[in-house]
Image 1 (tube, rainbow, N blue to C red):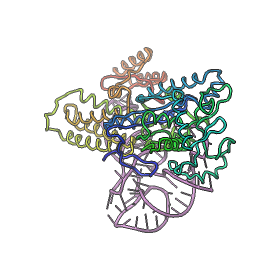
Image 2: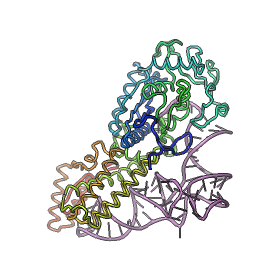
Image 3: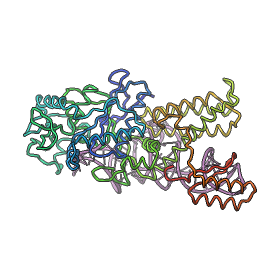
Length: 487
RNA sequence: GGCGGCAUAGCCAAGUGGUAAGGCAACGGUCUGCAAAACCGUUAUUCCCCGGUUCAAGUCCGGGUGCCGCCUCCA
């Protein structure tokens, strides 16, 4: 099976074929940096990162462009409130984005264009639309004439005349039609602005993406990502401007990720109904958050909650232990089997590894189904554990173990399971235990040595009171912090 | 009012017409002085309901019910 991608317009999965052989152009709608990023924002970028990584795994040279919309009404308001230049607000949030993106193991885009660095191009693009009569100046504003494009609405599946009934569309005196939207907005006194043929002003919301995507990826490119909530009006408008401006098809595949939900409400900045990324990162490891986000299909809505994150943490640990165990088994190097002489369990494992590999890539090929792919990984963990139990300590069927290791390696490169790759995944963090607790543990060991179980159990309770758990293993007892919510 | 989506075990969740992935939790087992941890195993005759198409439907079609999103700023 080859990569198939869901095409929102036809509502079917289509075989992916790049516009230019071997190359992929991908534009991701970045943040309007009016506020700090929340988990929902970062989900969109994690999803696109996973998609990019898979395309790269398939051998495509991907050009990933992700903008920052660094000027808009809310940024202006916020800057005015704080009494600072708008750039202070936008840059602060851009910096936060980069920090969180690094934590979440998101590969940096090749380009992060800023709207305010592209004003001349934007003005030129708008002038082109005006020249073709797809747009008109009115007062100091410029509006896109929605009815000048017959196909308007094809992306979001709506009809221009149905939207008429929408009571909330207000007729601004400057607009000729309530559906028209601003390409250029005149600046009030004291507001940031740039000179243009229509007077001093700034770009409207949608135009920046059309201009920057076209500039860096050409008028027609392969993938355009962003949250499902951008479908309308943002992407519909963006598409209309682009198609009218360049006269070409704009995007081959739209990658709209599902939105995060809290209970039954959408996570949303404007509703104050969101989890700031920084707060979540303070509570859960970044790898667990990423794993959680990729453990559902990217197009579906995700149920967000701390309980979900805890479950994801437990699942992620199971995966880690599986990989770690495999690493240990391979490192032990005990009695490798000569090639072609696999043990019974080795034979079974070899077969299982191939089956899980097939499942992993079939899932990824099916519209980047990372959830299905992760399922295959857990299947591999189980079979590896069964092999461990069946083969005993002395056997080492190097072939299938190497194949399993290779599959984990590829999976990690695609899913970005850990920032330090397989090495990070197999690493064990040494727990920090205070000396007082260690002393109690030593006392307890002594009690156990003289088979004084009552004293030993009493000491264990005392240690538990201090927030630590004792585990007796074959090699003696170990103390670690009691399981917290996040671990 | 218009457009669209979703409904799979206690919970989360995948599922490309061919006989229900995976995770969490629970329970049973191995191990242990007892535990814990770890590992193994078990847990949906059935996929919201009713019809239909088909040799075969969770998957397609029609109808119903419920939940949700968009139509306004939004990842």
